[in-house]
Image 1: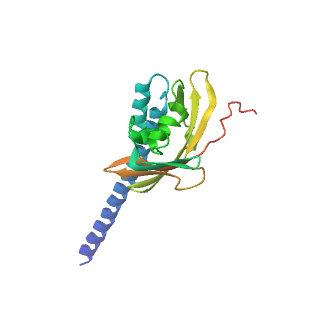
Image 2: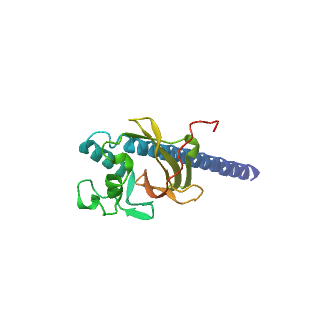
Image 3: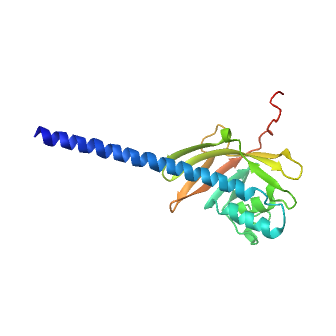
Length: 194
């Protein structure tokens, strides 16, 4: 009887350890996928206005592909809701969709602007809330490739120190941005002795 109890207890402990290891592995997988989502965002917004309308539209499609269909972005008190489609009425100025924001308001998408979006790694914060929801925050510091100027546009994805203002959601096993409030931040200082 004692042996059966010991075996049962050992089985429970081993099962709990296996469940903990699986959960721990899933959390790291989620964190990695959220970091990849962040990287894809910077790829989509970098060089978006550098060449022609077709390239700009491809970058708009790339950035929209990173959002849930019902995604919301709040910039300057204006809410942009839902994806929209490049070239369609829901992407026109005033449509207040994500497509409208990127096509008509975001500085990196203005034709002639060749901006590269960077994030100082220490500004990134990701917290997996469960296997389908996460909080995400990062800064976008834009470098104007034409003149090496870092002071053109610096904004946040989420608000610093305000949990829940940058969100991602897993849909059909894949992470997407679902909500963000954004605000300008001071440009970085390149002279560390100032």
